[in-house]
Amino acid sequence: MGAGKHHHGEHSHAKTTDDNERRVLWAMILTGLFMVAEVVGGILSGSLALIADAVHMLTDFAALTLSWAAFRAARKPHDEKRTYGYHRFQVLAAFVNGLTMVAVVGWILMEAVRRFFDPVEILATPMIVIAVLGLMVNIAAFALLHSGSKDNLNMQGAAVHVLGDLLGSVAAIAAGVVIYMTGWLPIDPLLSVLVALLILRSAVAIVRKAAHILLEGAPEWLDVEALREDLSKAIPVVKDVHHVHAWMLTQERALMTLHAVIDKDADPAAALTDIQKHLQAAHGVDHATVQIEIAKNG
Image (cartoon, rainbow, N blue to C red; front, side, top):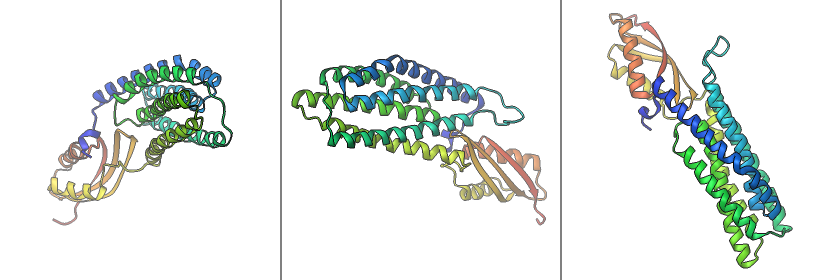
């Protein structure tokens, strides 16, 4: 993965964040407007696929609200207690959203098993109508989120929720048509399980990525050993690089500290500037704290 894709200047980063925030807000509004009709329709029709979709819509609204709040919080300036500001709140929001979707999948799977053994009468026509309307809303919301920043984990977490809803609507429509045409009720929990498993894969990926960042894991695109060798080759005065620590503030912002040993005749200030510029250009690390050490020999 190219390092350039991960580096953002302060101005472009702020502009991207503003755009992401607007997209999440509009997706939240769309979801909220349809939420009540979705819940009522699911209860009235008796369809698990539609009720599952309704539960998604409720959790989506909460998830999108959390994602939007995270973007708002990231605007707050850093202070003495939070020297990095509130950017990490976005990662925390993604982590919570991912865990929520895993819990929703668990509920759907348990309910589906129950309905396989104890089928429930389903009103196919209202199920289809409401699911089609839900699909239209979900497509609009997903288009808003999917066309936003691909590197922002908060956006990915919000998009997974809406994608789950979108797939749920498709499943509800398909189940409704099959039930209307044939009266075969098991199709409803069967498709619900299929959608739940598809959602689970994305939800687990979001949780894994967010946990990696929260645990101060190194950027996935960064090979620390290769970076050490690259610095020594790219900057001749650098003789050795050690005590390298790399982590992420968010998925888009990599941070690093390292010690660099340079020639005793080299200019420390110039070497520091060259190292930081190279880390930014070649490895996507736009904030690096470098401790310069002077070589004892030659």
